[in-house]
Image (cartoon, rainbow, N blue to C red; front, side, top):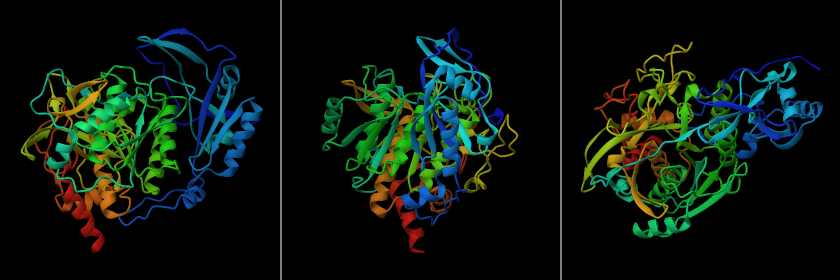
Length: 513
């Protein structure tokens, strides 16, 4: 038996706002996801990148069979069951008694209470045998604290400056089409939707019923709670925005537990869904990078890299708590998973429009209601090549000399100029960068339809061809706290809000050269 060493990036502390209530029972069954490293390094797609065929991707970039065999032997040695092996997603799911898992990974778990919730947490690192250390990227599931929050806000009173998503397709000059033959995946970590709400909403907008399918991951289901201010509001906002923009697309909602394990499992379920084959993912959940372990961020980032290689676009909300991202230490923080260099980080604006035309658009920062667009510089991910000319500020609290800047792009998010939706039978105005992610996901579905191929990971084109063609509405006024808008890219609204037809034209011009 080889000696065990700490798994890099697995260090955790118990949540500071929680109290100890006990320990798991020795025979409690716990399921963990072991994430493995690639068998071969993955390349970086470029502007002319063609998506990999899935079989080729799985063969070249899946898990090394030797590493899988080693994890199976480790499981047997510690009386753990192998529940599932997914070589392409590089995951092995193990289940066992708390006592056996505690011995296997050298951890002591506690039950902690925060608010009305009791959940399992850990402190310190996870230990793995030296023989596994190079092959294992992360072990998720021992700790089940909530991983992410929703990024939607309900406006407290009627608004004269709200928009339904169909109006926004005109204001932002989206190209024609319906998103036919496209599949948009929505990742949700709680709540649910009612078909009666959706049917009524589509009818109000003069649209046929949009195809919406719920997929269960990790035992979670479409479970509406009746609380529009909670997860229901997030789920329905995502569906109604994406569906109204691209009513011909199929929407697939992946429901998973709100843990780092559940979140990653849902992302992998969507990326590797060979039946529905999503072309776009929309994620409206997140938390400050400081709330994540490095092992979890690296595991998610590798999954998003998978999506890029497979030609799948991933849109992620950049946060609703300004440059601090809701942290109380007074420092600026970037939000994750928006800070992954493989996703399209979506910031927020305040939009005033009339007769289908933009009158003014500024950084969303509502001091009255406390919301502001997220944005800043990653302390975990270095500046990617595509942002090398953006004059991104230096990150804080990290050994990195450069950091990935977020957001990439933006759209209206201020609840006072927000989106009219129907949730739990009630019409309301909702905002937040949560709405921006599905709006851009719908736009990408329309562009995919027009191009006849997946746009996929298009960051080199976004910062190159699209920016050079001035196909985005540059936002040069406002602040999100620590950062101010300026010409070109900034850490409030990125490169700006969309001019959808201009984006499509720029992409077409690039392909004809």
